[in-house]
Length: 197
Length: 231
Image (tube, rainbow over the protein chains, first blue to last red):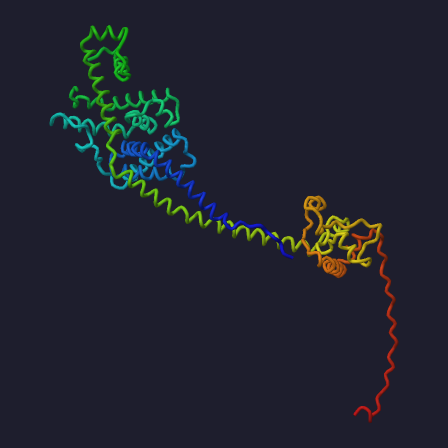
């Protein structure tokens, strides 16, 4: 006995077309976010790693992960916060693995990484202080460190940082305050290397 | 050396960036040492802020976005492999499920539950014949008037009606010119394999025990053959 079944031969091709169209839409939308959030991911990573090449690798990895999870991250604030956190986490992982592998000195004290100084004395003083500052930053707890880095980024308000990190505004403010005080405690003994500016 | 009483207040004021007020303001106006300390604290926090800002706002290399786009392209290319693979896997899984179901159904048909069959709840598929088919097959296939008609799915029965009769009853579509043939085949099949059960389905009367008369065997009378004949 034959059983008749209705089939649609074009359904597979149609689903393929729908899938590709959705993928193209997601790609287009992601490209819009990329222009804004690509530098953000890089700067967060570089704030941790203090190395351009490593920070670029970490930012690329974070953005790729964000693209793979883009369906869950369509909301702009959510996307930015997720990207910041994943960049920070990846950068910390990278930093730990690099330290374990090489125990290398940081590139942070190189002259190209600090604002252009006025004269040779300033260069020496700033480089020395900057080195101490970087070490002090590394010793900060991760929560304080991330918020301090984000607050130092140009173009982001406290509200936006709170949305990115996922904590109340008051918490962001208090974390910034505590982080700066901790840094000051560690750097107070090196303050004499600074020239009053 | 700052006055100990105002030391914490000095640091708090410098850290917060707010101009000192009230008692602290008055003390700073009167105490040059604390004023110098306050200025140094302000300088320290200023240096920290500028150092952190320099670290945070590093120039983004021009190669970053092209690198990311290239990696996105690779991700897009690699994605369809998985997408192509999963329908094949899903199809294979469906085939396995269908095969398994068919095996289970076949086994359940081989070893039917006698109680269910007697109660008329489960009928052999081949024995399911509509009254209309039986009518058309002639009086030899028609059940007795006292028996209820068997639950069946016929060619002319509406799908909803068929679903209401029995959910597990398979439905078949039969061409009109083969109705009689199917009816006779079903009757023959049921009489061979499940005769008593089908009889129980169609006729509620008690089936009389089969009486078998003993076989009478007469002793054989064997006569010795003559020698001449044995050759």
